[in-house]
Image (cartoon, rainbow over all chains, first blue to last red; front, side):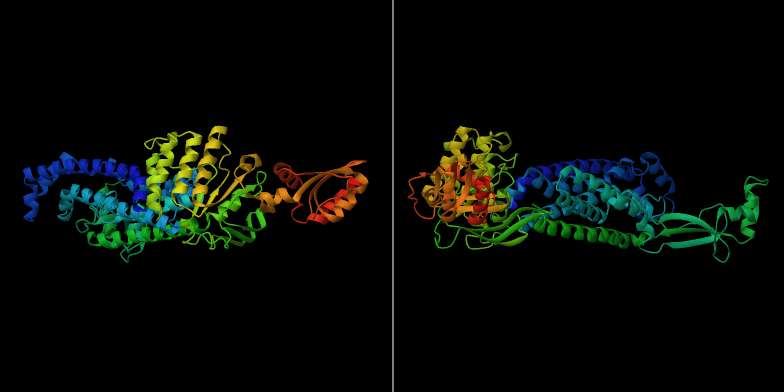
Length: 325
Length: 307
């Protein structure tokens, strides 16, 4: 049955290997450029020595290479492809072309037929997710070092790097695949199943992009007397919204501030109003998730998608054994 | 592989039925089909032939009733290796080569006869390297049959196997099938909405009409039992009392009856000849209740006609 599965799906699997190999090669080359530049200007050595004076070198590096290219946001959508091209056709295509009547009347039980296919794709997903996360983490290494030393906030805590490192790709890829498989089993037609997979995946993943910072672990707050400077947070933290509060900690809106110390468009310099606000005891606060929570957040994020995937696979298996045909 | 107990029916169903929503595709199906026959399953389109075969092949769960195939439940793991099934449109994997299909047979079946499957296809000049998606209809049918026969099944189920084939491919298909039957003694159930397709191949007939079984007997028995009678209308009643009338057309003076004879007919007023298989199948099909409640219903309708 493994030989059968490989013969039937080798094209889908080999295309994925090709796509991932091309992406890994691109990440390797561009990552190498960044690493060797950081070496050549002495940035790597400076950071390794934990010197406090790497600022100009860090600035030179960021000026040269910028942050994470926009195109990587697209790479964060790669797991979706596992749902569209592996999951959705898995059962739907057999039903659509009638070949299920061939496959299920050989000597292999329907459950075993599906189990071998699912395990094959799960192994492929594990390999693909690992390849994606490892090659992107390698690409990100210089940024991670800069972030740990507090020179940049470009690191694995924020999107799209959070989606492309650690175990997050495994979770989203499993979810997409399971969603596609279940949709294909229930709808029995490939293209509509792909459409449902696309909609369902975006409907789940896009809200999670912000929920993962707010809903999993209560964000930390840091506040200080009102000033024009931002509140410094620990290096590598993911910064969320900043806000204002009274001295007692009650949140206030910008409108309240304007009421207390004159309208922003009213006369007087900004400095006067800032000092007015500071004098009246207003505070500025910053919420954030510290870098130390990276693995905890990754774990919860991945586990929620994996749990959804298990339920969807269960639905697909049950429905195939009972209701399809 | 083909050793079988002739006492165990190849197919047995009790009160079998399958409902789709409110519509019954098959109902109250009671069958006991003996092993070692080539069994024709005949009935008009929509009579439930495909539903019955899909239940027997383990593809479909019945809504009610019981089905046993070679003495076990269709979905039983012991059953699957012993049945062969070819679906109506002969599904094959379009991207597979013919050779891949034969390899599939080996991958998915514990006992697989590669050499005779291959010999059968090369004997028909079907290139093993060709993709299944580009085969002709007749070649597709042959490859599907070769895969099913390669399993060395004790029971082969064929759903409308020759419906879309040209006459030559049709003959070739049945020829390959019957050669295999002659060599192995395998039981075959094959369906068609046209009796003519099967007449040459079958020695047992099941007639399915209006989702119910109307006839189930060997063709010899059927030919032996059924008679076509022509005679005076006023004497029709004496016939309907003594025999089961399947179909009757009675005018003022003349009665034409197709009967299941319960003993010989000696009255010289009647001209008697044996019914052909085609005639009797058509008669049962056009009288959907004939099999279910033979004498009473039809005697009534014959009397109505004679008034």
